[in-house]
Length: 108
Image 1: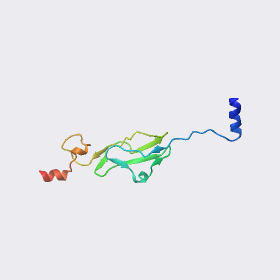
Image 2: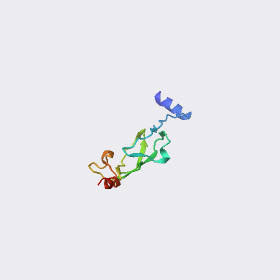
Image 3: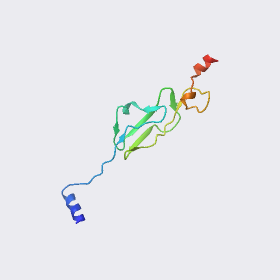
Image 4: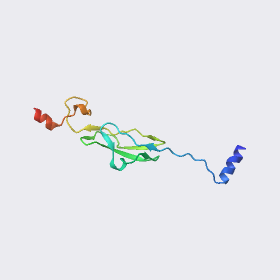
């Protein structure tokens, strides 16, 4: 009976389809944000690729800026953003230790 019903549905043009899940707006790591093309979007279709950019005052320390939506889940963010300023203490990518070199010159 089950095979007959499936055959009848096929003949009549009915199909059982699974819809791929979309992704919500992705959130980047510290000191980065979505590039302009993607800022105003709230949802992204399965297979969508978006890019992040380092915020002003930060520069890329490696890793891909792109992530992909797959079955409702974003791939991991690989981009790392570090301060463009010199640090007095480590780690250098912490905003708490980043001081512009100009300020260091004034204080010396």
